[in-house]
Amino acid sequence: MDIFRLLNENGVQLQTENHKHCRPGWGNISCPFCTGNPGLHLGFTLDGRYSYCWRCGWKPLPTAIAALLKIPEYRAKELISLYGGASTVSIKPTKYREFTLPSDIQELTFAHKTYLHGRGFDPIHIAQQWKIASLGPASILKDEEREIHYKNRIFIPIFWENKMVSFQTRTTTKSVELRYIACPKEYEIMNHQRILYGNPYGWTDTGICVEGVTDVWRFGVRSFATFGIEFTHRQIRYMAKRFKRVVVIFDDDPQAQIQANKVITELAMRGIPAYTEIIKGDPGGLPQAEADYIIKNIR
Image 1 (cartoon, rainbow, N blue to C red):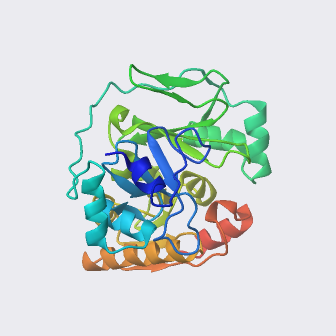
Image 2 (tube, rainbow, N blue to C red):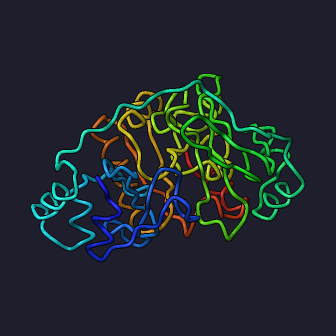
């Protein structure tokens, strides 16, 4: 289906994959479902078969189109059919490839150390603790279908059961709005949204659940991340199996707090007590002393 033509001819403009906000293979737009932080989080695959908000989760294609065009869902289904799609969307099976790292991985550069130091992190400690590195100006992951550029980003490996199974990368340039570019799903040994980021050897009976990798760096080895506020049931099941109680520390924006309460509800259904620790702003942006104080007072 020609999703770009459908939306453009009905007054909605998608940003293409060449835009700084968009991941390869996607077109993006502000999410009509997000509250407090709409961003350009709602994405459509270029073939118009799938829609997903990177902040509030999967959306049925007719539902997403109806919300963007402000029309009834039955009318959105008619438009999908008119533009060559199916109102009931089937997902093309993922073609998996051998796990491959980007090229040009280097030791942490001076520029990246300076960036981390500016955010209140000890770059040497973070590099040793979490095995992060730098990606040089020629860093790329390429196959016969596409190429993904990771130049000058911080490389963040993701481990599970002592094995690297995926990775994320983070820009240090403020002008680049797409802060994180992850390993493509088809290259991962294990999809990162089905596991937790952290160091299980540092976990106690009380789990400290945060959103992203930098939040874990701030709160230390007692914490773990769900790779964003959109968690999966597999992650919830693992939390329930591993911890006796969970403290959730997400951003203070409304959508993040809605998701934090969903984590609490899901855990409660499995008999695990949980509560939210409210902080101001981004947990990863807290002064280290404040983060240490919060951790000290979590029992």
